[in-house]
Image 1 (cartoon, rainbow, N blue to C red):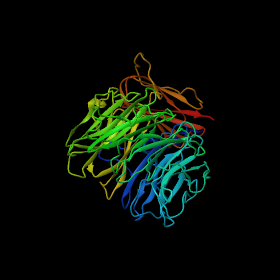
Image 2: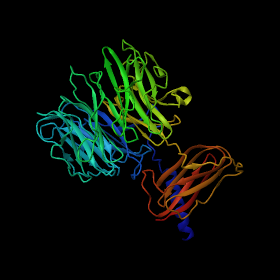
Image 3: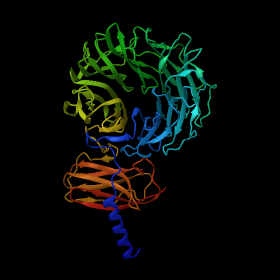
Image 4: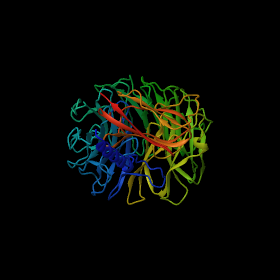
Length: 585
């Protein structure tokens, strides 16, 4: 390479480095959150699911919602990287613009092991309410055709579906169908979209189930699924909870269905929640009404359908019911412990608080008879708590309002091991601009919790989102323990230095080492030969020391990078340095 060419290349790269914007999109300002779904008309009923480890885009999050911008409730979808960068078009792609009712019912979103989105809902494209399923790749491709697959036909009413993917790539969908034989139906599809059960699905509910509703479907460690639903959901009925495990043929696995709750009733308009417990079983939490009292309960089902806690569940409050509502729970398979966040409300329903309870493996309360107080019961109205387990522990988000109606905030918290508030004993604001908010959902990725909700700050309703890191900060990413290694004791460097990466050339990973003689804000980024940002490895403050950071050869989107020459650029408060390295395949 001659001198003129080297100088031209140097100035070209320098210009690119100085003007290339960071890809991170999560806001670090609680007053300006990330707009995910926006445009004319309201955007409502968000759902979110994180792509699991093993897929190319592991840690990225699908967010879906109804988009009423056309006057029809179209189904929209967006894919966000761990940094919050949207990978689909701004405002998301339209999955389906087929005709919908003028009112919306719930819908379902899941992700399979290859990182594809599974989107299921009911619409009236043929004039009747029927169940549809779409499979969308991370590139936005419609893998099962532009119109998806219609799982039902006919004029029978079909209720909201639920969907999951099994370990072998099959997709299972369940829905309520109002017909001559009312019940819950199930269809299983292979990865290419072939229906494996009879047309219209198998009837999997029982003859005694008169008007089932609220069905939830989760995967197991193998290819079975666990289904839970309310057998009879009418105004005058006892709205109970039943569960069963089904194999790949649709046959029940447990000798008898499990009546998870049959001593009381779900409050009208309330439904239970069920999530995988990480041990091939299920965790269920729900509201319960006994006379004029409301309570919140939890139950863990083993892989064999055995109730770990007392029959009818363990109550978060020793009195069994004195104003507990809206529970959200997580299960630790290592200890068998269940943690539940819930709303504590007074009899006049004009005071609310946020409480949390933990149960041991058999349902004994561990945090006082009524749980620990996170937010006191007062006129500040909390609602819709959502718990997740991330790499750093248990985190949560919730709504808060101490002003007139329509002045809601989104708050976040970290739980300590003894059930107290982390972050110096306080919750922090994830969204502090007062506006009418609803439909709060949460997901966990890495060391962060993600919250998504509908918000009317700009127009009728948009879908907004915010990440909160495990240290209580917004935006950016926390460097994981695996990415940076610090020696226990070392002599402090006397000068700044950045070393050649080792190994070099490398495949699949390499380590970048550098010396900081004093504490500094640090940015370490990887660029390709064209000067395009590939990965941001560090963006935060580091102590004076020699530091070692590993790059796994992946970009910000989680995709492995091609062979070639790459630049790593380190920027501190006082120094900037750039070196090259070579990735080989």
